[in-house]
Every structure is written in C-alpha cells, then in structure tokens.
Amino acid sequence: MTPTDIVRGLIVCAGIMGAAGVALAAAGAHLPEAGRLSTAALMLLLHAAAVLGAAALTERGLAQPMLGLIASAGFVLGAGLFAGDLAAHFFAERGLFPRAAPTGGILLMLSWLLLAVAAMWPRKG
Image (cartoon, rainbow, N blue to C red; front, side):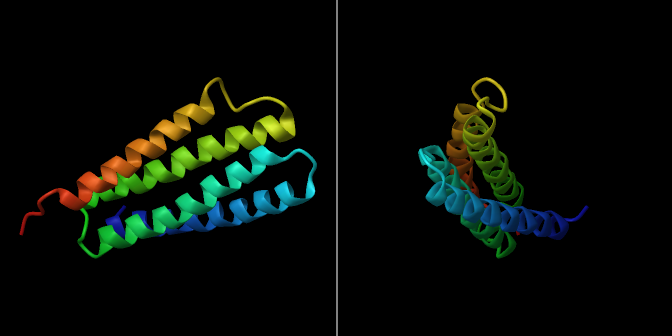
C-alpha cells in the first residue's frame, strides 16, 4: 500500500464522517432532547475537514509524511469513538465501551499535537 493509497482511504473516511455528521445534525434537529447528537455531529464534521487538511498538507510536503498520516488516522479514529459513543448513548442507551468518548477526545487532542509536530519536523532532501 502506497502513501497515496492511504491518503485516498483517509479522504473516503472524511467523506463518510461528513455524511454521518450531517445525518446526526439532522437527527439532533428533529428528535427531542438530542443535544448529544449535536456534539457528535460537530466532532465528525470538524474532524472530517481536519482529515482532509492534514492529508493535503502531507501530500504537499508541508508535514512530515508518516506523522501527518498518523495524525489523520487519529482524527478518524478519535472522532469515530467520540461521536459513536455519544450516538450509541442516545440511540441504544449504552455506550460503545466504558470511557469511549473520553478516549476518543484524548486521541483527537493528541492527533492535533502530532499534526503540529509533523509540520515542524525537518524533512530530509
């Protein structure tokens, strides 16, 4: 698998995250007491854009490639855990697993920091 294949996969993930974010936002607008869904939608939509941005920066050589791709994958996994846990609590009245949302949130924060490091990391050649 090439770095370009990985970037394409991340773009697919960003598209799915964006679609899921819009769906959760719509559900949150029409279902009573669905405040958590709005938070889940926000996390997915914001981090879908972050995945696209990090992948683009990596492809253009503005971020260290491996770290940029890891940060992008962290955005996908972190947002999925965070939003998925909130949505599961709303729709199924139980979470994905204990502490899934906080784990996802921590992963998102670490991914943002890793993206910053990837942009500062000296590139060879």
